[in-house]
Image (tube, rainbow, N blue to C red; front, side, top):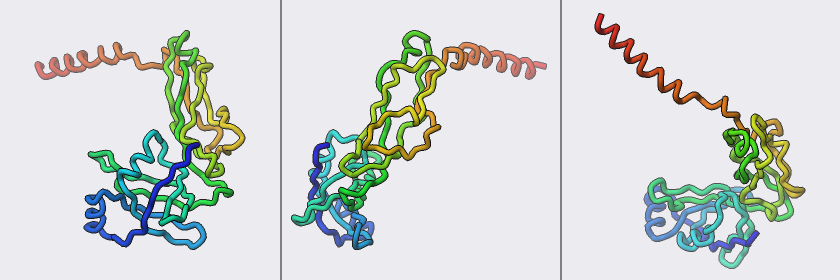
Length: 211
């Protein structure tokens, strides 16, 4: 994984008005949960620099190095809040970490490949789980897991216990939870049949009104 470095400054601005002025000045307010000292330190980041550092990274839980006035602090980006309309970050929370101690993170799942049950059996692939919780060292955090579903047949299910994530990741999510299933064509709703019932109900209604 490429190292992500972000410059951060201590922040004294607090309160709604002060934070708004900070954002108008092109800064993002944030916080860092301290590991040894305890408590939380308020920080601010350059918005443009932060967005450039995040380019190409889909996950919101990343290992970064915060440059705090020349002191490099390894931290896990825990949460990023975005402006609903603009989509730009408006607040970022970090947790200071030790590179030698394992952390728990949530990693998104992406299905790859076309199941044989879809190709040959006319089935429909349905993803039922989109993230898993894992435990690993901060340097081994994965931004995503790509799960090959090409061998799934009709009415076959892929469970968490079937995932092969490697020796560096320990799954925390329960093993019996389904990740994806290929439903047979008979399991799909009969759209034509359902659509055909509506006019009949309307017709009956009109007949009742006419009596």
